Image (cartoon, rainbow, N blue to C red):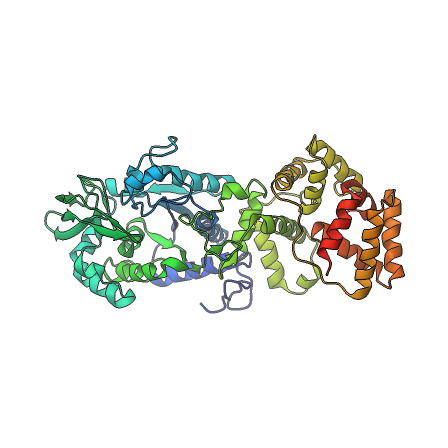
Length: 547
């Protein structure tokens, strides 16, 4: 698309003008509309889709799939096009393994559709709906609007019957194409459709062996199979299944996306790096078998934990939206997801919540006119910064900026004042001049910071490298604080004197102390603040952090 930059840069049109709000979301929406127009398709309502896994606990990457699709929907609206997000739960998927941390009793249900497995927690009508509800709750809590659809209802109502028929009529050709494109030969020997065995209710053991085109019926045999590295026994039943909803069954992933896209008129769907082969095949099936131009795509990579491992429902290292929201705001999650889409990223609550909370405040400053030096004279970057703030607010920004309290400042105070916490921390923020008056926004920040203070110990992050003069000054300050210098004014003066005596710039020493204590270069007046959180505590932080 001429003039549209990569997804990590700013979004500009062919004449250098900023597209929409200047983010990758605007770029994708622009490309999508231009493509739809070139295809001659109606743009009266543009459907974007996100698939929701229902086989394990949904993590923040699952939320990201839907949130990013919703961001494209918002960008389309900003360009003047009606759009909606369809959140599709694949709750006919078979359970391949029991995710870590879930009851071992689920073993007996392996290979059964998750919508037919009882909820082990007894709060939903099935295991699949229990898992879907966790993700839907996350979407609700961050403000994302969607139309929810279930695979169970979709197949039971026969909404894909015409697409299934077209695919099964050309299954031999599709099997050859899958082998050619991705080297998978299984669909040369079997149909890309799994009935649910009417005898044992298993999905992947029911191997479709033939299709009666006139009767639209699949014949199957329930055989032993390999799944997730283990043998699953079939029951030996032979039967037949209607594809029009009279019997339960589902298409294989290699062709199912294409059927949904064509049936629902989907125009945009992102996909993870791990299913890119399936998407390539589905694109071919949509275009060459179903006569439907596949949706516009963008690829994203996975979130990793801080050990560099993929965050996975089955691996048990799940970070949910609910967990994040114990410590951070909905806007901080959305900023995480909307900042960029390309590239894998290591993610952890302890490290990322404070930085994203503070980054959101910085973007709010930019949006309301406090433009940072590096953005001045660069309209595209300035537009992108403002655009990120807007999308983190789902294009519904407040009329005025909120109370800007450094997250780690609130955490440090929350560690000191563990009883009557909100009132006492708010009093200190007023005393420091950090806020001018109490507000619900400031109280909510104190609540989140209090949760963080209670959950995580005070160990700092990476050591701070300083020159010899700075190291000497900080050493004097640490010893001064260990000895209990006295009043807040004495502490403030002592820091200044230590800097001067060692030939260090006082402003640099103060900045280093803010970095050590709060992880930022700014904060409240240090003398009163250090007196409040404890001189010995700050002395220990200095000696542990300075190299």
